Length: 118
Image (cartoon, rainbow, N blue to C red):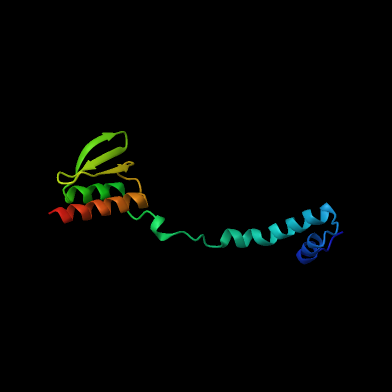
């Protein structure tokens, strides 16, 4: 039952024509073999905002420059406060770890809020 194309199998499925299971298996195997290399070489589309651009140490440095101080720490989780603001900023990870995008956004907002209070 070899020699079936994808269109023939699709047509058989649409028309409810019985197809031998080995024909389906062989067609799947052929499709996988044809597409395995193109799939591994295709670029992965990633949102650039999700890419880490800095280190935790850089975020800590920026926070301290804008008046934030370390309020408390438990393990690798640090909580920073500002003397004039009621909010806090949490960072997790060692100094050399890549900062996560949400941590960078939180620090940016916190620094902006601190500048507004001056």
